[in-house]
Image 1 (tube, helix red, strand yellow):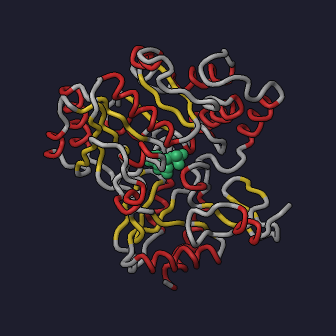
Image 2 (tube, rainbow, N blue to C red):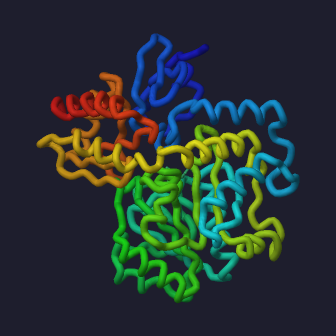
Length: 394
Ligand SMILES: Cc1ncc(COP(=O)(O)O)c(C=O)c1O
């Protein structure tokens, strides 16, 4: 055991100047524990990952079973492995027939890279369309289609030929044309502070993509896997994407992502040129076993059906005159305050009192909560009490 802050700060590359610096010894359910016994309630699910809690017993068992058989044996796409076969079969059984072929990758951003490449390869076009304030990942391609200019400037030149439309604005859809290879959109914008599009907009978007032949890519890396109350958020808008990307909670705590489309479309990545997308660790068998276990837990019992009720319970408890607005779908919340500093004070105070919340990178004056879907009513009440106290003190 080495929980030294000195080693962390000296030998692990930082992402920001103010890391949380909580030493973690173990995690179970909705709780994280430090070596000195302090318990934290994880109200952000490790940022969108632990949708069925930490170390869900079914997932741990699935991982252990796979470990006893084999780990990595070959790069993605060559050997037949039961773990990826079973995962792809289960996942596609839960999706519409036009999303019946899965490309397994390592992360959310790689899923989006694969989806963007597929849209170009399928259409032989170059233009990509995205939406303002979107977040699609931190590699060059995904960053290129992300909206936050402040984060991008230092890394230019990025991909050319990208158009950004206003989210939820039907008029802007005219800018999708027969030049457009793909349109990438988070079904629910996460990092922008939980932005929920209208059904009318989503239908119009689907129609425009169909009419122009542009591939509609829905990024459900953050809003998928039950977070909004259905397995995938697009189910609530009566549309089907041409390509779906998933990650984060998909692996139940191990790293795995996927881009999913139809069998016939996916064949195109295997020729002209061959190896259109390749990845060493995509479909890692242990990650696949974990993802299959996770899918089984999410889709069994009453878990999904109960998401909306739990969301409403939290919404009913979080009442305070300092709150400016709450945007919510399922168990995905953005709680707006007057200033960024106020949100930081709330995050710090709640943390002191054992509850982990966060903000949004592109929307720092919102307090973020997205607890594990497995959270109980009692745990919700306890966490909300701490959050309210932190708001009162802010
Ligand atoms: C909507 C969305 N897309 C893509 C990503 C990138 O995923 P990853 O961090 O696994 O690369 C994220 C991560 O926060 C996300 O929220």
